[in-house]
Structure formats: structure tokens, C-alpha cells
Length: 195
Image (cartoon, rainbow, N blue to C red; front, side, top):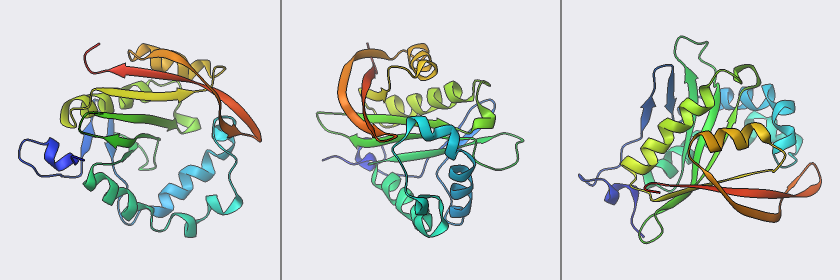
């Protein structure tokens, strides 16, 4: 399997920082585990309808203490990129997350896109702006050919967001993920580098 480093012309993997007009997207720093926990605690109710049921310890520092090192290693290896969103001129807290998971090279050249936004930062266009930057990184720097995302059929806001970014719904994954104790169908959406 080819790594991110081998996908780069100079053969070196550096930890990416993406910038837009209003946002900086970067990996979590080694000393920011507490900031990760604050984001999760602050958005617990906001994200509950869309995420698997979490145990109480999920929202504690011991659960996340080693996360920065793990995520940075995954990015260095090119297998996953979990970008934290920071608003330019903001309070320094994470405004959201855009992640590329299961990054595959070689004949697949694909990844799964995931994202969430802080409850206080929704409706401002930040999610679209951040995801667009990650798409450019994925199709440019990583040279991927396909990205996919899953979304529950009743999550209209997320479906509209994906459609506005050029994703197309390919079908339904039946009973794909357990959310709130119920196995929920999810739509699978994809975007190609060159449709």
C-alpha cells in the first residue's frame, strides 16, 4: 500500500494545515486533549441524534489523553486526517471537525469523509468552507479519486450540505449504524475528483 509520503512528489509527509478566508483547519496539538474534551462535552446534546450512543467516560480527559499523538501519527502515515476547525479571530476553541478516515492509496485512492460542527457555529457557512478545503486537500495533495460520506436520510441539513459540495447519493446502507439504540439506515454519498 502506498503511503501519503509516496503520493507526494518529494516523498515527504508533513502534517497539513489548511487555511480559508475565515478558518484554519489543523490537527490537534499534543497539549490540546482538554480542548477536544471541551468540544465533545459542549456538543453532547447537539450531536446525540447523529452519533452512536456514548458511554460517560467518552466525555472525560482520560479517554482522550493520547488522542493527539494517535491522530498525528495517523496523519503522518497518511491513513487518517482529523482536522479541527478554528475560526480566525475566534476564542481558540474548536468550532468543528472534518475528518478523512480509511484513506486508501494504490488502486482504490479513496477515503471516508466525516464532519461535525459546534452547536454555536452552525448556520454560518463554516462547515461548507471547511469541507471544501478538505476536498481540495484530498483530491490535490493526496491525489484521491473518490470520497464518500454517510448520512441518515432524515438529516436534511447534512444532505443539502453534501449536495452543495458536489456529492451525489448512491443508495442506502440498511441498518448501517446504531444511533440512540436503533439500527439506522444511512445514505451513502460520494464525490469523484473528476466526475
